[in-house]
Length: 218
Image (cartoon, rainbow, N blue to C red; front, side):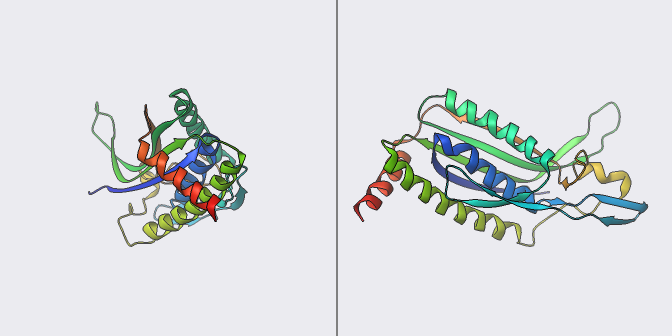
């Protein structure tokens, strides 16, 4: 099986990291989740609905739609919070990457553990920049909102392609494909990981500053 790989990149100030990551991860998981399966008998089941809600960002001019499951939101927020703290501890300027990997399990014979086979990986590269004053921060607030809107459209376009998805499992195999631990939603099996780079390339910082200065000049 070939694993699809998609890369997104955003440049934000430190206080925007959490909301930008939540917006993108929630958008992806919204389209990679189903309602809970309710099996009547083997091979026959119904699928529950997936509730959604709008989330307004505080530090970015942006509103995104997410699955309304509070359980799923807590899991994502915990991972994003750890990533944000690691970025913060790396210094005032930094670069990091948070990845969302979808996989399915392949049962192995005892005594070996199940094999986890990735089928789609989303990598979000994050560049953190420092801004000089409140005017620059306000412009960044608007620009990051615009860029996030473009990224969300990109995510939806990619997901709407007719690419590989694990086939719908039988009741006995549902845990090999979906995370069934949540009571109100059923995402495909996934894991969130991150890595931090110590320093930010000057080209990224310069590009953001040029964008802000060009806006100030208008």
